[in-house]
Length: 316
Ligand SMILES: NC(=O)C[C@H](N)C(=O)O
Image 1 (tube, rainbow, N blue to C red):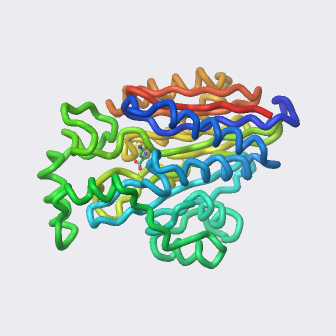
Image 2 (cartoon, rainbow, N blue to C red):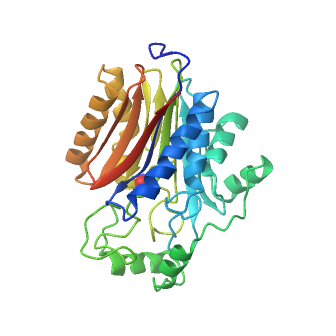
């Protein structure tokens, strides 16, 4: 157990997704600041990341909870993962109508003997443990975007053909540059430019992390990305904890969060570990991501190789 931080102080860092530079950075920053502050009011690191991420899931500006990305069958499905440095972990994925995916991940960690529950059964689990289901996750913007999408009918093969015709077969990088504008598909797939949310907290003794997303815009129905995969979208250990965002398939292939925490274990600071992990990620995959970290000194670190990633740090 790490005990070198300022015991009694709750340290929280949050992110609002790696991607393009948003049109509305200030209101987004205000929500991130609110989320980080909400985390510092909590008693434990797990409560802190849960509270912080719930704020972000409820804000339509972020691709998590309400405002989540629409999959190829017109359904918004949410994913999340949580972990503590005591190696308590839970994840939930592919949940239609669940705003607070982070709370379901927490139910998996605290109420089941498992680490990952998916699909309709995760929704049933949420319902049984008092997490709201049947929530309308569409916003006016997502409704309009979906209506413009000329959605496919039929089988997964037909959905894949539709994806291929729109995205040229490349679906690896949600943050890839494009000549096209927000609201239309990009050259390599429009997966919402800046969106997924995450939080890391440290109380001087232990760490927790949580990441939550609606995934990628127009991904094949049923697709699950890095976010709820342990070690990819989130990871916590006694040396520190991480939350990642960006090109989900590529993040999963290099287990970005585990990689970043490994650098803390090797003695790097949070900032050095974030920069090293993102540099390695870029070299290995050629795509875009971001990561936030806290280390056992209570120092926060963040790095990204996309055009932007907003973060907020609060301590109390
Ligand atoms: N923008 C994101 O962070 C998307 C998320 N990593 C996913 O692939 O589901």
